[in-house]
Length: 476
Image 1: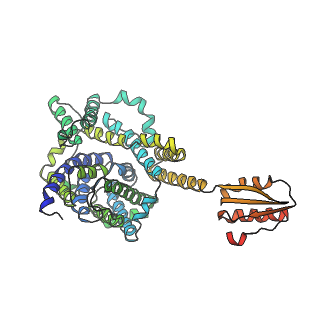
Image 2 (image 1 turned 90 degrees about the horizontal axis):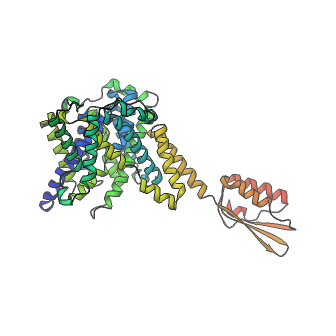
């Protein structure tokens, strides 16, 4: 907790983070297909509950754009009443992973898969929010949304489009202003400007609907436990837990590079997120994860301790309880603009270009992961990416090389590298191409790995050439 010397910095940072979080909490909830208040509830829990834990001192948790697609799909499939149970189960799973010390293993996930996941989320988010921007009902799946883009212009509400485009323009321009002028977050300025324009011009556009935070809280009932037995629910729960955990821990690694304070304890942070999501599930709210946008704002605003993120949750609660009617004047198109900007920032164009120049295989994994997410869904797309990353790593680490060395009349064949079934055709071709010799000796001492398929093939080749197979005991 803060001392006298850090309270001032933490207090100021908490206000900044709350102003950044408020439009994002509301926008993410609307994009997820749930009441706006549930996004604020998750933001409050991220501050007042998760903020107390010691896993990471400066990163801030709340609803995240990265989970929007998965939550929308879950609510569409199982209903809003089931959301709390799904989030509760994901939170319990995170608690278990943290208790088992699995937090540190998330650092082993391929960076290309992570970037591909973010790119896929960004593309899905953009495709959905373009319809929200124009006030047009969106098709059910992402491919349908992309296919309907050609007809979108003729059905759009151009007043709403202008508000959303103006919000995006403010967000882009705000980052180019001097630092002293950016004390107020760009997202808040953009939403406020769109709201003011709507009121002054008396525009008839859709606005946020608010019923009150306390009224929106809907704890799961005993009957809701039955949804966990539904087909496909297990995959949704696992996807929520894994994606939320991965985004949190990657965010923690990024935040650690932004300050000189204590480093993140990954297992403790995973427990903190699990406890927070368990509480969110009990309240029927959105799932949470650590969010790099809010976390970066917290660090840049001068936060010193975890008190800043705790107080930011208090500001969100105060605003939502005391001034809920203020949210009802916000046009949905402005929130769509905020999320379009967030989705665009998730597209790793520079990462793809850099990988293509240096590691083209990684670039292929990234693009394939994003494409799979767009074509299927988030969970299946990430599984495709992980499978490709594993296959790529297996292929690259299975190099095998055959050398021929004459020692008098005897031909010594040295096999170097990793002899696995992936390279067995190459190995057999090289052996069959050896010149005739009175005596042939295999030297396997240069092998780092010899799997059963290759060992069996070498046994067969040995019998064919009627030559012994020295070194086999040492390798096996």
